[in-house]
Length: 181
Image (cartoon, rainbow, N blue to C red; front, side, top):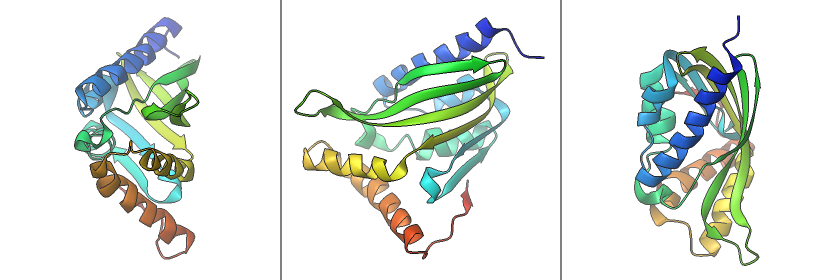
């Protein structure tokens, strides 16, 4: 039986607020303890280049919210707002953006859209999350930010260049797509 709508909505709105706080702090790993059940499975296939599959809260803390988000000051100035959500019983779909620092000359944000499929587990925790976003366009967004002088060199070195290599290797069939925890 599904949990009450208000309970599920309160939790997804809490996650939305936690993202704002994590952006302010520029640290993300604490979100794993706040919103994910001990047995939660978090998956992000990164456009087919790697599959980050975190089994359990500790792996979520180390991988998605740790290694992939806590990249030091490289992510400073970025935000990841949840724009919309839909709830059907214990299932939630969120629409969010990876929003880079600054704005384009026309006033629009440097951003790339994505969606998450989340299962609510009760007690303010999620039992699964699956993220999807257009990884190639994320790399293009980073190029655009670099051209505008807004891409942090640490982010380029520690995340963008290694991920671009994975994407190129995958497209050239040099790399094998395999889960990574």
